[in-house]
Image (tube, rainbow, N blue to C red):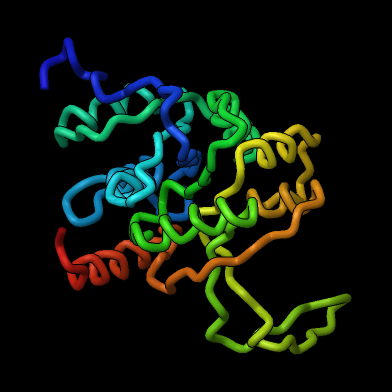
Length: 242
């Protein structure tokens, strides 16, 4: 790929798209003890972020892809596109002060109120296309779809310095994608920012909508710590190649 078409795969959204995904890549490399943000670290020979984008490209939903990156890393991402001959079309935009503001920036590009919009962590490279498609189908039916898995461990909650046992079968660990009707998600993101907003589900729930859970996978891990790279490498090595 030459310099002249370096950004040829940084595309613009088209009105035909009924499915979208906003991939939020605002993480730093602090907990990974890395000089670059974790979404750019190599996994199975290419940046983590490329695996994440590929999962959505391989899904039947085939969403238009909006990638939200800090402005400081736009040029670096374009260099990676060239270096790895990455050809999946996507639109690159600048992130906001928080994840909430970054998602809101992505939503501003989607004008179709009837569309379905997934929001995905950039550092969940092992999300399966099947999980992605199930989430879109659930959101089409119910308006919301949040991927989650049952806890495998016993759970305790600390309240006022006292720990209390919770019923494990009632506890779900939330993952991404989190998928919604565009009209609902846009209305929810018109709310003022609140520090209690930890993900899109919490924003939509605060707006008043019921959150439907769809089945996730314990292998759909979020790359946060150095050991997660090793786990992801092992899981990818066992994954059938398309």
